[in-house]
Amino acid sequence: MLTLVSLFPILWLGCAVQATEAPQTATPPSPRVVSVDAFGPPSLSCREALGLANPSTAGDKPNKPYIPPDADLDAMRHVQVGGLQTDPASLPGANPDALPPTPLEGTPEDLARVGRVMAAITADQHVRLSFWGASHTSADWWTGHIRRQLQAEHGDQGHGFILPAALYKHYRGADINLCRTDGWKSWWAGRWSGPFADQLGFGGMAVTSDDADDFGWVQTTVSNPQGRRVSRYDVFTLRQPDGGTLLASVDDSEPVPIPTLGPGPSLQITRLLVPDGPHRLKLRPKGDGQVRIFGVSAEREGSGVIVDTIGIRGKEARSWLQWDAELATQGIAALGSDLVVLAYGTNEANDPSYDMDAYRADLRRVLTLLRLGAPDAACVLVGPTDRAKKLGQDSYAIWGRTAPVAQVQREVAPEFGCTSWDWQTVTGGPGSMVAWMHRDPAFASKDGIHLTRAGYEWSAERFLDALWATVPKE
Image (tube, rainbow, N blue to C red; front, side):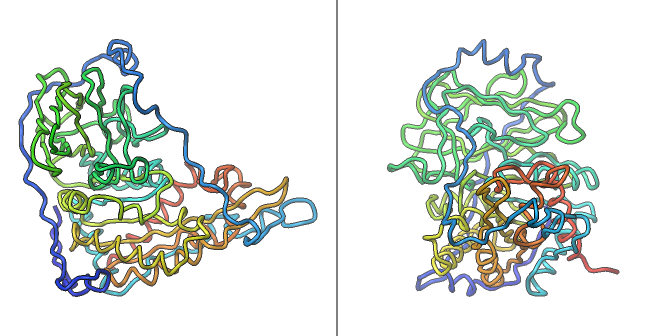
C-alpha cells in the first residue's frame, strides 16, 4: 500500500466543525483473519441456486432506477433543436473528441499529492482508488472503465468494494458476478427511519437478513480480461446486540462462522485468505438473529490497482451526515485508500430549495468526516454532469444550477486538501447533454440525466488523462 505523509495539519479540520478540540483520525478495528482451503467455484449457476434455495419473498424487492423529480423548469435555459432552430451539431460538446482536456483544479500541493499516487502506480506499488457518489458512480460504467484501464496496464489487484446482495435493481459491478435471494432488506441513508437507520458502514448502505434461506454471493469472472482472480475477501459487518451468525463459504469449503453478537454497534472485519485464483464467496445468515453486511472487498496481494465503486442512486453528498460517524470513518480508514473521489452534485443541482450556502456548509461537514477516515489520501471532488429536460419534440430545458454546484466544490476543495474536476465543462458545457443525446452513437441517455455506457467510458478516459497530467514530467 502506498504510504503518504500528511501535508496538512489537523488545524484545517477545525474550519468545518464547531468544537473546542480538533477531531482525531479514526482507527479501524483489526480484522479477524481466517485461511480457507478453496479450489474453484462450484458449477451451480445463480439461476439453479435460486431455484434450489427456495428464496423468501418477504422483505425488499429490487427497485426501479431512480429518476429525480423535475426542478423548476421556468428557471432554466431553453434550447430549441431541429427545423430552423439550433442544429444539434452546433451545440457544445457535439464533437467530444475535439474538446480540449479539462485538468484537475487545485493548489500545487494538492495536485502534487494526486501526482504522487499516479506515479506510485507506474512504480508497481499497490495503490487503491476509492470512489463515492450517486448514480453516475453506482452503475460502475465510469468507474468500471477506470478500473479496467488501470488494471490492464498496471496489474489487477481485485475488484474492491461490492455488496454481496444487490442493493436494488440495476445495482452491479463491472468484472464481478453477483447473485442474491429476495429476502434481503436493503438499507441506505433516508430509506428507513428508526434507531438503527444510521448504521450504514462506510458506504451509506447495508443489507440485512435473519433468514437461513437467504444468501448472496460474489464470484470472479470467467472470460473477462479483469476480475478473474482473488486471494482475499474482507467482509465488513455490524457487531450488535441480538446479532446473529453470518456463514461465509468460499467455493465448496466448510462455512466460516462470523458471529455478529456483541456490544455495539461496532464495525467488525473478517478477512478470508484463499489461494490466488477464481473463487465464489457465498454469505448467508445462520438463522439465529439478524446479520447486517456493509460490504465485501475482493482483493489480491502484490503490486497493482484496486478501484472501489461505492455509489447509491439518487444520493447527495449530505447523505453522509445521516451515517453513524464512527462506523463510517473507521470503515474508510480500514480501506486505506491512496486517492479518494467524491462524485456528487447532480441531485444537489436538481433541488431548487437547496441553496448554495447550505450546500457549502454541508460539503464542509462531509469532507470533515472523510478526512477523519482518510487524513492523508489524495482527493478529488467531481462535479455534476450537464443535464437537460425534454419539453417538446425539439425543445429542452438546461439545468442552470449545475455550474453553481461545481463552483462550490471548486471553492471548498482546497480547504480539505482536495482538487476538483468539473464534469460539465469536460463534456462541453451547458447544452452538451442535448448534443450527446443526439449524436450517433449517443453518449447520453434519453432521460437527459445519465450517460450511455459509451459516454461514461469517454468520460473515464478524460478523467484518467486529468489524473495522469498531475505526474511531473521528467
